[in-house]
Length: 188
Image 1 (tube, helix red, strand yellow):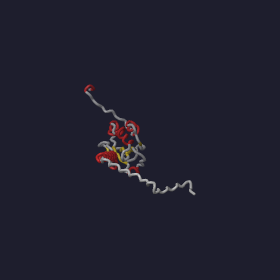
Image 2: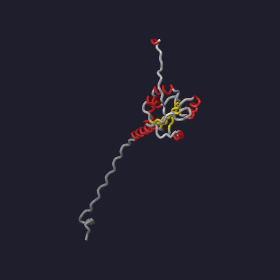
Image 3: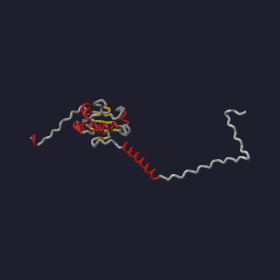
Image 4: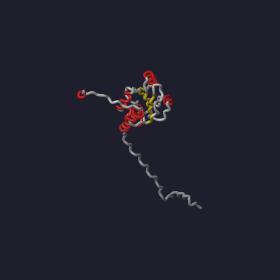
């Protein structure tokens, strides 16, 4: 008695019947031509992209010669000369918000004029390399701006992510730009 789920065993060939021959093996595929040059070009392109990304992320903030990363020296100078200090905290590498602050606020001519007019010392710090300052000033996000008096005390509450140069120096820092007087031959 056979079970319905069992497959019947094949019957062996009889001497009158020829034995079936197994199918011939499939010949191996011909070898593909090597595309080594293409692979090397692709690898070089990937390495260049990775190098570019790495370089662009490690490039320091460029704010100009009036900016420093030495907070203690700026505070010492501020105390000696009775000046205020602007401290800006950035992430490392700079976030898109950090870059917007640099482009739309800190490097604008009117901001530079306002800071020059008031003789404000300028410091920029990344949060990775200046963890002690981040802890001391309780920096929670970047960019964050601090406006310190000659004793290193906040003049204003910290400002996070300013987006406009005029509101930055006028509203937050309280600086009113003085018009530069120019004389011309016709006004004499």
